[in-house]
Length: 118
Image 1 (spheres, one colour):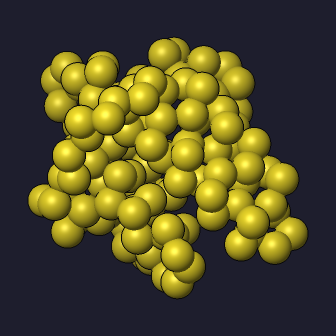
Image 2 (cartoon, helix red, strand yellow):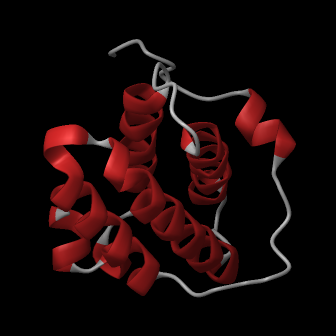
Image 3 (cartoon, one colour):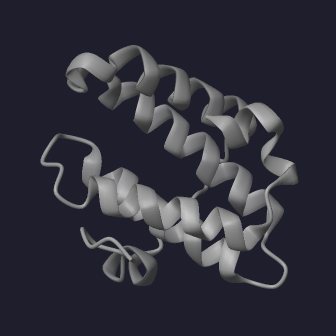
């Protein structure tokens, strides 16, 4: 949320990759409807942020989709529901909807930090 509040456009891609890897690790063991889709999209986002330069439109589409999925899963977050929902809403607002988004199978098959802390 801090990065979103400061403006995602100010986050360097390498720092964004670290944040995505942390999210991937946090969700690696989550067995809730929608979690696997979020992990898949995080992998695609990480892959974009590792490119030089990242595809801005693809990043915005992924942020939007991640936001929508995060809002949907928030109700399953027990004590953190409001924080998770706020994160999802902020991600959705940071991105831009792209109805032609394709799944990045390669990125989702190779998540980073899958449950392991560096």
